[in-house]
Length: 208
Image 1 (spheres, one colour):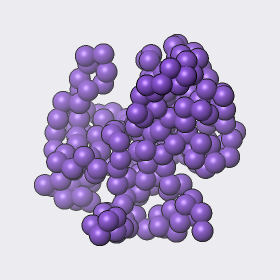
Image 2 (image 1 turned 45 degrees about the vertical axis):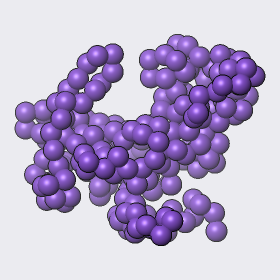
Image 3 (image 1 turned 90 degrees about the horizontal axis):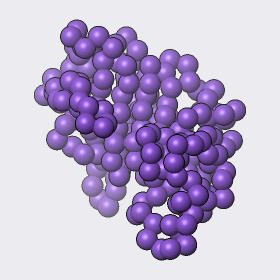
């Protein structure tokens, strides 16, 4: 059975207990249907996930800018979720939701998570997608899913991700490939350099 089919079965449920090296991990669906609906507010979040798991922080937006937001599971790197609100004072209506790092217990219903490789995302999307160049604003960010499956699933919110080579290419040959897909330009995920580097997801978004 393929990994994608396994995740389709798993995420028929909102939470799934999975054992990794004998340790129980709770995998949860990263979506705007059940986990983070468009209509949610801080009270809904506390009722669903528990008040002790919800906290307030100043969250980094980039380039030295911060904004007050809500963090879910702040003490757990693999479960942490950052929520930015449309109505900041009322903490109502998500503007976007972010997960960042090397690995996470949050997965999309199609099986994408932190650490998912570009080539695997292409298989899930069934179509090349457009992304920003590296070492620039929105480095490695998905700009469009094109005609793929992930574009068709964008109804209540849009799923986006940022990718990067990990570890950073140290070999001279890989650095030359990296230089081909740098800068303030768009690239296809099918670009030969992108395929060779095969970057992985380090940030995921739900955008409302």
